[in-house]
Amino acid sequence: MRTMFDLETGDITGEATQSQRLICDLAGVFADEEARAALPQDTVVYRVKMHDKEKEGTKGGLLFGTSFVNPGKVGREYFMTKGHYHAVRDTAEYYFCIAGRGALILMNEAGECWMEEMRRGTLHYIPRSVAHRLANTGEETLVVGCCWGADSGHDYETIARTGFSKRLMDVDGQPRLV
Image (cartoon, rainbow, N blue to C red; front, side):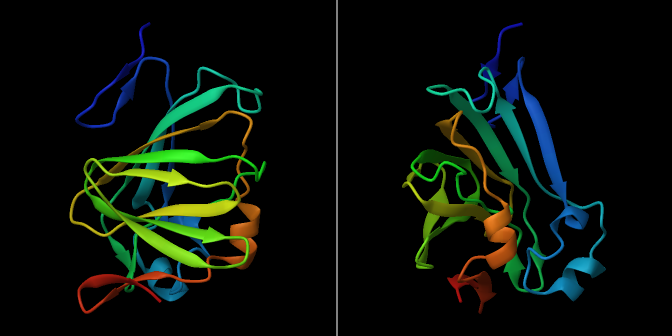
């Protein structure tokens, strides 16, 4: 079966795998745990479709995927992905925004945190040794394509333990890192 990538929607069909994160999967991710626990626990916060032609861990291989982050908030904090460093810190990644509005939140190992606005057509380079996560700041699904080295791996544990040094919050109707 031929694999297809829809340039308008970011959907990948054919050889693709999909995963999703529900609000119940994200305990400890958001600042307001009480607000998270009060939401319907089967709410889909985000999903990822991947064309995994290479096996994870294959040296020199590439992986390609699309993240779909739904609109919503937990308290004043926007729906977002868990965020991660690469297990192999000396690897970079590209993100490109296909649809929606959002933010790419980045943090280096020294704890310096910044964000880049995402909207249709923006291209984002994630340098080596930089943690990253997506947040949806708009009213429609944020759709972001990405390409990364198959051997880069994912280190979710460090972020689960230490978090990002700043959070993206709705401050008077505007997304702000606080």
